[in-house]
Image 1 (tube, rainbow, N blue to C red):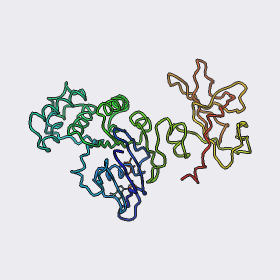
Image 2 (tube, protein in one colour; image 1 turned 180 degrees about the horizontal axis):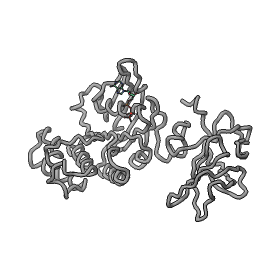
Image 3 (cartoon, rainbow, N blue to C red; image 1 turned 180 degrees about the vertical axis):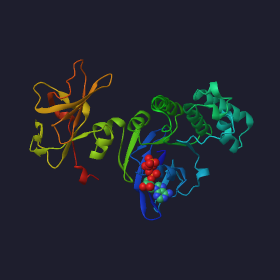
Image 4 (tube, rainbow, N blue to C red; image 1 turned 135 degrees about the vertical axis):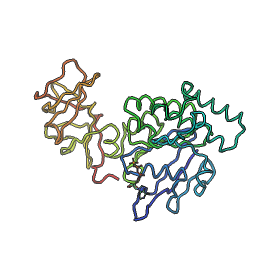
Length: 344
Ligand code: ATP
């Protein structure tokens, strides 16, 4: 195990419980995303791992076999990349990238070789001699990444590194970052509130809610087997099928779905891609809105559930607003979860 956290928690003055006791294991070379809405404790957890924040008593943080719980930030050998780049504006790109190596007092030749190595890795050749103030947001973030990895940290921590960039650049850099981190072979923890970013970059995602990690898993596992309604909604926008389950029947305002087994005490959820238009479907609704999205249409349908249901529909001939449509939902696409009020 590369990094192991036990009972890591944080209570801020005034009794604000930013992080409830948390255990997490991260393997060597693994990339883990901490994903959750604003205020759920992601940054607090990251800062405790970095040594920028102390945990409540009783925590243990081990790096490989070493107990680093009380180690100060400068001895933890972590690299950090923030949303705000935090580059030195009065230094060139090379100067920024070499800064950490200079602080380590490495011989000049070695510094130069390492700087060149990460410049090539991060594809920064074209802008190395410029002032950082003359770079684009995407280039600055690549310099920040190069600067963080140049001293070969044993752990790389990234706090919303892409959120200052515009949407198109963010999507491009996201894939680049995913590839680069794997090339570096570095153990990394990436904080984000963006589900797509977490899924694109991380080997495993830890979903956080109100100060606790509620589920950890591969992007596929979280998507297909969410353990709580919160995870199902946060990963892939699952919608409640808020009707009445009676044995193996799910009664909804727009019709009754036959289930393949009786279900007790659970709430049903479905994702938009699993809601299908079918002439003989058991559900009936009214199309409220039709949005063309290139590869498919997004339909907003009322009357099936209490709140409007979204359906992703691929066809050259979509229904029109105002039309009545029949729908079906494949049984294996329905997620049965604890109702939200009682979810952990
Ligand atoms: P965001 O995505 O908005 O950055 P986050 O998930 O990273 O959110 P944290 O920054 O970890 O959340 O904050 C968790 C909780 O702790 C929040 O309620 C926040 O207000 C509180 N908090 C964070 N830092 C402090 C502090 N220094 N003093 C008091 N409360 C704090």
